[in-house]
Image (cartoon, rainbow, N blue to C red; front, side, top):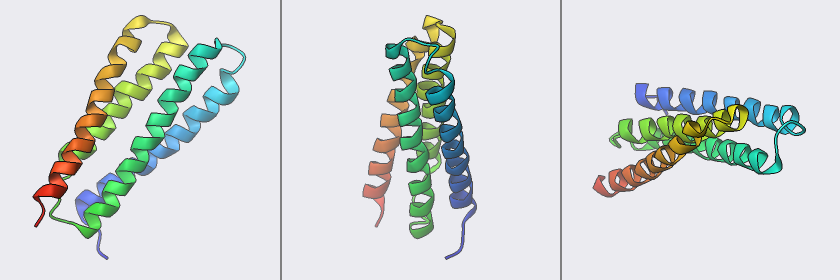
Length: 128
């Protein structure tokens, strides 16, 4: 199996984002455990969980691209990556800073996750 530039880029992005999820999750579990309220810790953990889901989705997408090189992946990978930034990172920033604007931006990231999954579904439907 030969890597395409797209599949390699997506696999590298997914790997880096997964590593970040581990580091951020460890920080939340050990560094924030006794500092923030339980409900805020749950918000942080939700950010980490969705961060992992979509880092894994990027890895899956990179492998899928290897087997289906005609699949258009730019919108999908962009939606997942920006979704992680807007959903997960805004959860993290909100918990750490208490600034409400970060919490208000979280749903935009959720919408991007949905866009990515639907783009994947439509992309697969278009394949012959």
